[in-house]
Amino acid sequence: MDPLQDLQSLLDKSGDRDNPGPEELKDLMASVRSIAVVGISRNPEKPARSVPAYLASKGYDVIPVNPFVDEILGKKAKDSLEEVSEPVDMVLVFRPPEEAAEIAEAAMRRDERPVIWLQKEIRADEIAATARNLGLTVVQDLCAYEVHKALDPT
Image 1 (tube, rainbow, N blue to C red):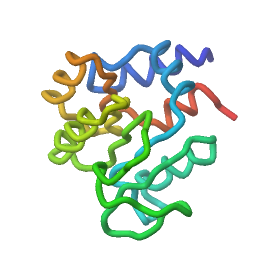
Image 2: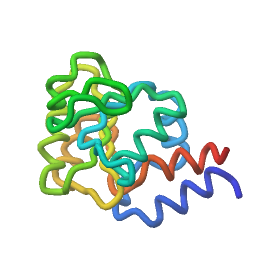
Image 3: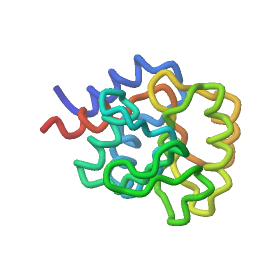
Image 4: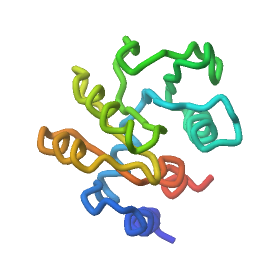
């Protein structure tokens, strides 16, 4: 199947019809290099660990953000997004929906204006609309692993 059709199929299953389209997702995944992962898990069986590990294996610079661990994926974990001093292209959120808005707001305050990506089943519609109105790219209720895999099935 065509990767863009695969992406459209994933988008159709997402609850957010305002997500970027297949072409924009393809371009986004190609341009992103550094990803701050808020809520990365120490448990390798959880998606909050396996998805960032997969992205790291594909060459992305994954910056772990979890105040309850010292190191994940061979890197020192940051306690919060505000503690990440290096520029990031994307903030990938693995936190419950009730915490997602606060994390998205913190991402919006960053000078580099990163993509805000709320993982599958995570949405914060009000703050997503605000961020989009300010020109930021927001993805909600969509799995970064599934998107990457649709583009690079190897």
